[in-house]
Image (cartoon, rainbow, N blue to C red; front, side):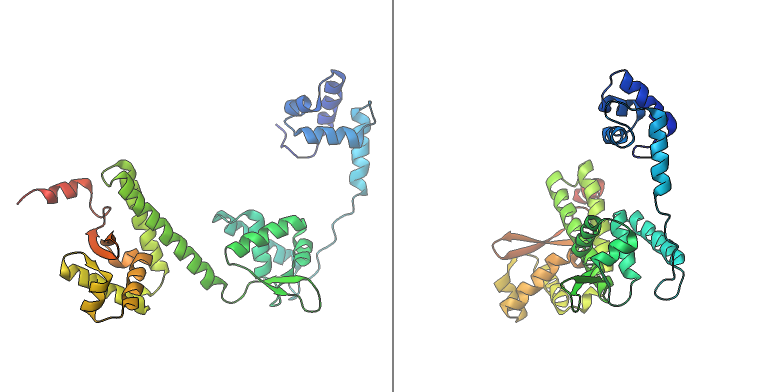
Length: 311
């Protein structure tokens, strides 16, 4: 079966001519050929004459048009002296690898093109010329990269244009973006455990998901304990465990000898990084009143049942 959008063959054109004589419309002809309707209508308009489409003549016109097309210009050396073909092959290979991680193909190509550009970056026109794609494709890809914090834009000196570049902080930003996203997924999965119940199949799957993304987020966050708010968060956790009962934020501040803002920051750190409380979960049981409970996904239903038995 022909690949939709590929070049029509002489046999395709012969069948188009026969089907037109049989009175079939473009849509039906396209279905029989396995081609888009637009391909058939464009073929008749470009290579035929009004009301008279002949396969042999259409093939001849298409052949002449193909011969008139300019051959591609030979690749010159890249800016650093390397052969352009070598650079292009590298860009294509790395873009393919990035696309395999989930980045759209065109977006990956634009990213690698910027990654291998000079320090000053590239304009949209530069990207269009280097990648031989439409301005709309470049614009859409740049928008996607900006949403991921992978590219920044700077004014192009002496013009009204902008230049796009990969700066030295790109990997840190990307890392932090991924870490935050993983933490949100983990929190959402744990909320799902509460909704569906830890003893259900859905709850068990969500529990494993929450564990995985929680650990991934915590590992990717680097040395979380280096943050003062996280240290304070551990102290708040210890206070709640020692008290063995729910405490208000004001009671925590009084007992710890801290300012209320410091307690609020510590509580927020626990909420932002739930893995530091693992295997416990900080819960608000009333207005500004907190307690600790065991994470529902840490024990299986059978384990909880066994622990609930007396003796």
